[in-house]
Length: 271
Image (cartoon, rainbow, N blue to C red; front, side):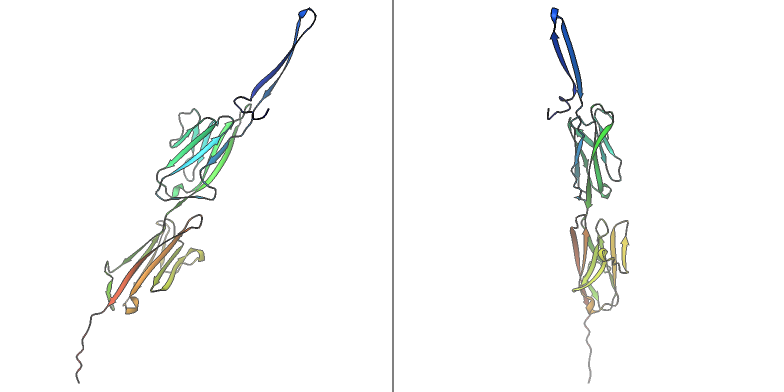
């Protein structure tokens, strides 16, 4: 037979033959065979092996489907940096947050309400069942990578406050900060088309003067302008870029204008 399933195809089959001889005495013989239907449980997870990108702070639902010819009896969701979640058929102590329903196909969902970097990494879904006549658990695993992304942001502040004007000969500082959720891989300042690359992770370039904060994941550069001259005026642009798993570049830039002024003076020239 083909297409045997565990519910209807397995079990004991008996063949009985009877015969009659002289005097109508019945003679009987029989033989039996037991068939065990074996099919390993299979599992799938909603994450791609190459990485599923989700935004920092958003919500995300991970789905894990487990299928077996015999009803799967347990599902395990192994999460990065967090305790495993388990569901067992008929149990009253299943993990909160992992919701599973179904008989031969068990559909499980786990909702992350607000993503942060602790959710990033490889999540594995494992389904378990028993094969007929075998008390050992059989399992199937399916893994996927979750990548949490955050767009880089750039902020520029001036020691002279909101004004853009500074008097000739005075001093000031301009502070450039890039925040990418993780350390931005590229950071530069442009002054009237004159570029200065401050940080480039691909080139291992980190000039002095750039503060790298591994806790806040920021890059900070403070530019001092002492005894400003007219050449110090103009537009200062700060550009920073971030990378995620599939190498998508997410840039941000900000601009600030500096105007150098000088009071007019009148000289009395005498012959």
